[in-house]
Length: 174
Image (tube, rainbow, N blue to C red; front, side, top):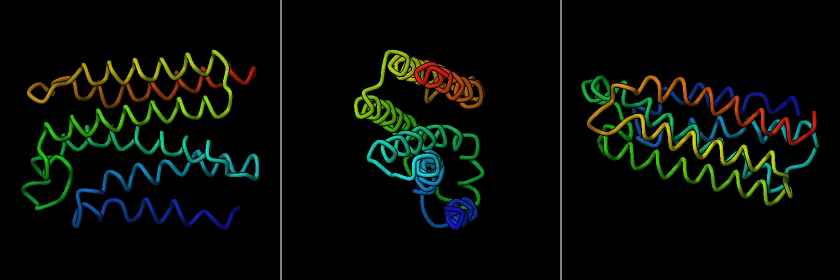
């Protein structure tokens, strides 16, 4: 499977240039990041069941949602330079709606993975923790009040990844 390494490299190289052509650049970044769990799954098991793709989709939606928040840091520069993003196309409110929808889809896909794998309580506690942390992230900022955007983007997303990993690790009994 080593021959697949160019796929994410190309994806990450292409990403920054997409803002010159399309506001869908955020979805591209999410999709490229979503390949990580899919690649990890196939590397460990040699198989690609639907649960692997659902987990990749959950990561893709999560990353795309928080990249929408991150785009708010650059919205004035993007507009001045004629670059494309959800923020320049749909405005700040559009970013918030998009991030909410994407984060809700991420939680739904994490739940689908749990159902597909017949996961135990630790996994489900992890999904609940992710849902609550994402709700908290969205409560930190509002379209008219971006003062806590740093905390929402940098801190909460770091906590989400560590917390979910911890619950999944507990689920494995490791």
